[in-house]
Structures are given as structure tokens and as C-alpha cells.
Length: 151
Image 1 (cartoon, rainbow, N blue to C red):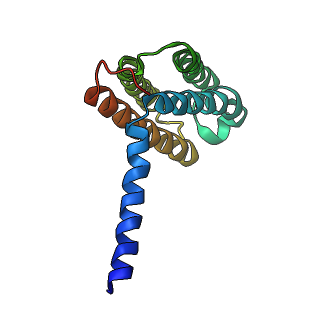
Image 2 (image 1 turned 180 degrees about the vertical axis):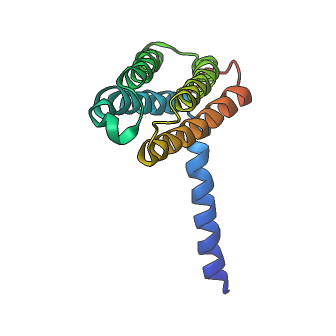
Image 3 (image 1 turned 90 degrees about the vertical axis):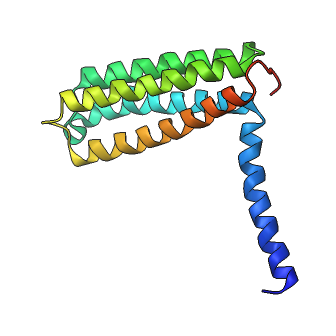
């Protein structure tokens, strides 16, 4: 590999690192990402998926409960985004709350396991993976700069 190609490869690696650091260095952006994600989850789980109950395999009441939890998280995250100035503390709270949502989701899946379809399992597996990933980033940021309110 010549010097230019190595410089180009290095630049690409640096750009990837820079992308990740932008999230780590801007807790307010993470709060906004969490709010938007919670809104999407609330809409899908609470409003859309109940129409496809037979294809998902979870009861409407379970989907509505999960959607209501996500709706509450949406309100909290948008409140934090627009009104709070200490996002690191909030990131710790919402990161743990998101993991709580995952635990509740898993409990619902286990309790209704006999009726859960492959499509329902696939949807919630992807949702859980995204939420766990986001929660890990939120908790990392909260732990790295606890008490720092920049964002």
C-alpha cells in the first residue's frame, strides 16, 4: 500500500472515530436521539403493531402497555432535551430506564411465548438490540463526564 492509500485509509478510520466521538462529546444529542427513538417505539408498538396482533403474537393489551411506557419515555426525553442543562445525570437515568423497558419487554415475550410469532420475535429482537446499544452509549457518556453539563 503506498503512502497516499495509507493516508486515505487512516483518514477513513479517523472519520469513523470522529463520528463516534461526536455522540460521546454531545450528551444533548443523545437525549434527542433517545426522544426520537422512544417516539418511534411508542408509535410502532402502541399504535401500529396492535393492528397486526395475529402476525406479532402479543396481545393488544401488552402492546399498548409497552407503547405507553415508550410514550412516557418520549415525554421525559423531550422534556430533558428542551429544559434540562445537566444531561449527563439524565443520561444515567434514561439509560437504566431503557434497560428496564428491555426487561419488561422480555418478561412480556416470555409470558406470551406460546403465541409469539417469528415476525414478533424478530421485531422485538431488533428493538432490544438497538435499545441495549443506545443504553450502553448513554451510560458510558454519563459515567465519563458525570456532573459536566456541556452538550
